[in-house]
Length: 516
Image (cartoon, rainbow, N blue to C red):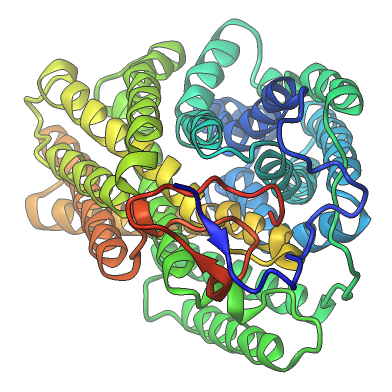
């Protein structure tokens, strides 16, 4: 049996206005390769500089208080501008903006690699984030247009999800390799040839698509959400240095609350909102977006804590620290492969929830670290557990986040997948670092300043951070279980309104070539 649509007199809205969304695009697998390369650059660049940070800090005389902006300048610009980037891609053409994003990303990477001072480096990192915000939603929209058959689309999402989850770990490995054998500058310069290659290849193998109508750009919404996120992250940073009750931290938190509340009000009243509430408040999609936000919060902070544990406690070199993350990448690939096989059979919730629960368990295992722990006894098994769970979760949440999206909202829905991860990463980097620092300081105050106490205090900070991250992922698992309802026999074509779909029981629906 096959699925049918009622009201046959009404044609579904087309997502591609120039006829390129036909099922079975012969270039779709080559396009997948280019999109995968672009997504790898976007995700990798959020983490590739972590291991290189000490070298860059020394070379450019960056203060301890300001060094975190090498990371958060990128993630904040990325997260804050993703929604606007998705809208721009919808209306000017997703292929066109994908190529513009690639070339701009390459130029910004070159500027960062050639930076002569901290201000130039931070500005280049923010510019990278801005062009990534244009490129990433275009990439995901192009992917969902190209793959319209359910099993093929699940495999494509496995590739995309595996890269989204594993790119951060790969970035840590690459960062260690380049820093030790070349220079920290090459962690940025390496993007240039890949961006140029991907842009040239995209002109040949990627098909254009765009929204059938133009609704404006909602600049007030973009300004308030970006300003609110910056204030929130900077508030966490100041709380770590000045205390949670400091006037600066309190003022920043208050400003963040006002700006983010203003953003919600603007979106509710705007004629053409940057973030239509119909996209966010759909129960299944909302559950996926919430899970994505919490994953970003937990995992980015985890990478930072592990990096300092490897180099500060285990005294690993930059390269050895990078390779210590290699099992994480392998686990992500394994989890994504498992998800691609089970997703069409059992539905998103039955893959997402176990994946998140598994990852939370791995983070709690990390929290058992003590001064006598070794890489093999704790870190390796915990890495594998967390990464397999993350691979499962990334694939399923990416698929569910785009179910039933109206064609005109394709770009913004795609942007939300990345935006929530990057927003969570920005918040997690600041918040979890503050939690770890506070826990370490409290331990040292209570136990003295002997070398043993200092080492134990540092580990106490890491384990406190891991525990907090585990709780965050446990909350994500519960939220996904309560909110995500989709089972295999409930799946609907992407881009077709939910009320139009009639599905025979136990019969999977192919994802239509309209919509996202």
